[in-house]
Image (cartoon, rainbow over all chains, first blue to last red; front, side):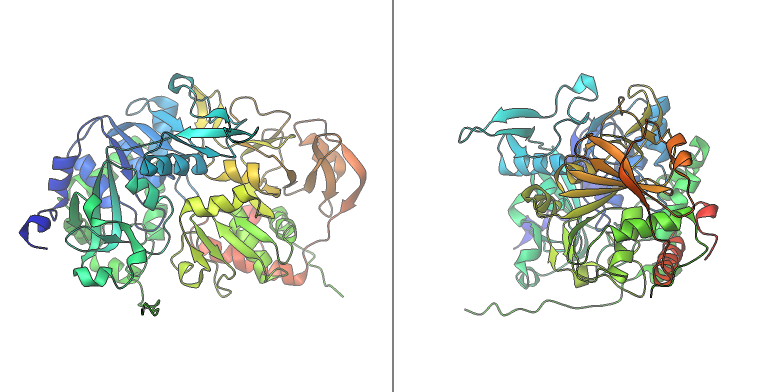
Length: 312
Length: 256
C-alpha cells in the first residue's frame, strides 16, 4: 500500500471536480440498495451541465438530476417513485412541458440495457438478446436511430437481436466497504451495478467504510470493482439515503413518499432542492438536516452471515 | 367445504383472482406493485412451494409471512435468498425459458397483448409521460405465461390496438385480470377473449367497458368469490402495503 495508493481517497467535491466534465456520459449505481445519491447531489451543487446519465431504473435520483438541469439526456428503462408508486414529477415536466429544458429519453428495456453494459464491460461491440423486437423501444425516439438490430448467427440459420455496447466516461457506485486501493465490496441487491460500473472508463467508489486490505479477502466474491480499475474513493457514510444499504440502513419510505408529494410543483421542487442539496455542503451536513433520530430509526440491525471454509 | 366471503371490493377480487393464477411449484417472475402483492398472497395461501425470481437479480423460495416486504428491494429479502446475482442473471432465466408464469401491471393493453407503459397521447408530444417498461419488456416476451393485472376496466385502458408506443409485446399465452373479469388469449382468434366473470358482474357491463368488440370462446364461467382465507390474506397484505405508503384508491380498501 503506501502513500501513492491512498491518493485515491478524496472528498466528494474533489472527486466530482477532478473526474466529471460537462457533457460526459455517467453511470450512477444503485437498485434500491446502494444508491449513489450523495454523488448525484454533488453533481447538482457543482452546476454540471449537459451530462448524459444512465442507470437501469432511474428513480427519483434521475428525477433530481433532471429537475436541477444537470442532464438533458437519460439512458434508462424506467423512471418513477417506487414508493406509492408516484410520478417522478421533474421527469414528467421535462418530457411533457420542456421544464427546465427538453429531455432526450433514450428508451431502453432492462435486459437490453444490462446487456449493453455487459458488452461495454467485455469490450465487444454488441451482445445478442431474445427480447426487444417488435417494441417501439427499438426505434423511438426517431432522432436517436435504431437501438437494436437483427443479425443472422454465423453458426446457424438463427436470427437474433443485438444491442450495442455502452461505455460511460465515468461511473459512481456506493458500496459497504472498500480498501484504500479501491477494492470495493457490495452486498444485498446488486441489480445493474457490476456490469454498469465495470463498463465505465473511470470509476469512483463511494463507501460506508474504508477497511484494511485483509478484510477484502474475507469474502473476495463480494468485490464489485477491483482496485486496479478504481480512480477515486470517497468516504461518505449514509451516502445512499433515502435508499437502503444492506447491513447499514433501511429505505426511508416516508422521505421517499414525501419527495413526490413535495415536488409536484416547480416551486415545491425548488424548495426541496434548496433544503436537501444547495443548503448543505456535503453528506455530513445533509445528515444534520435529516437528524439523528431519523437515522436511528433507519439503522439496520446486525445480522452477520456467511462463514465458509476456504481451506486448501 | 370452502367458506366464501360475501363483501369485498373489485380490487380485492382482482388480487385474489391473480393470486389463483399461480400454481404451487411454479417458477414465478415477480414484478413491482400489484403483481408483488398477488405473488405474496399466493405464497401465503396455496403456493408455498413456488420459486421466485426478481429482476433485481435475486431468487427466493421464501418471503416473510408476518409482514409484506415493501418491494423487491426490501433489505429483509436478501438474507433468505437462494441466489443473489446480477439483474442479468435473473433475466437470463427468462431468456432460457425457465419462467413458468409472470405477473405484470399494465397501463394500457390491447387485445393482442401489446402493452404501453411509456406514454399517454402522442409520443413526441405526450399528454402524460409514464414510467417506462423496465423489465416488463423481456418478461412479456420470454415468460411461458403472462398474467396482466389491470386495475381499471375501461376502454381507455383496454384498447383495440396500441399504436402510439409499444413498450412490451406478449409473445406467449396470457391472461388479463381486471376488477370485473378474466380475459384469456385465444389461440384461434389470436386475441384476448372473455373467459370468466367475477361474481355479480354483468357480461354487458364488461363489453361496454372494453375498447374492442370482446368475444368469448365457449362457456363464460363465474369465478368463485374470495374465500374467507383468501380475503384475510388479501386484506392483511393490503394493510401492510398501505402502512408502507402504497397508494390505494379509497374504494379499494373499504373493508380493512
